[in-house]
Length: 178
Image 1 (tube, helix red, strand yellow):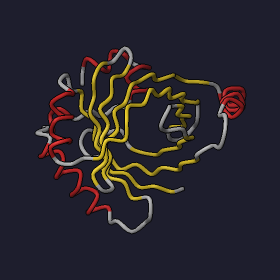
Image 2: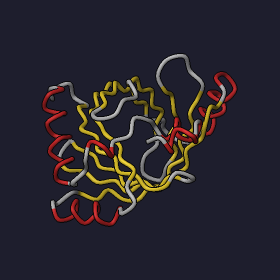
Image 3: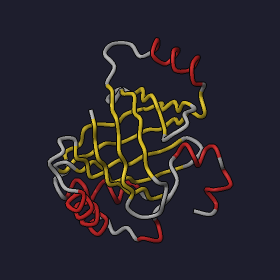
């Protein structure tokens, strides 16, 4: 499945405030997921196997790590059954670069997904992802949706992060400059 995402990430120490705003705006709560994301060593982009109670998938994404709105091109594969064999194959052929362990609360408003994450060794974060999984939503519309929810959640440009959780864990010194 090919997906286009426009997204932002913010380090945020008061996740209950974000959750309250989402609920007040009738966001659909999907649930809380304990996710283990295993990142594999690849030449281009990032390849991760997500193992969770709600979300399980193999994800390849290409994006420029930059502050502000990020454009991600994603290939998503949802394994059926146990992903243990797939993980073994990927580990033996590519090698693991890092493992991200997080608890994630997942909300949706239409095609926009909100994550309130508690990442082991990193803390609390909020992510907004405007998602086009059908090829029918323009990139401009996705950016407009992200900007709408940035304002609603009272997030500021200065709070936006340019690194993924995997990059933060691989380069702990980079977190202090965020």
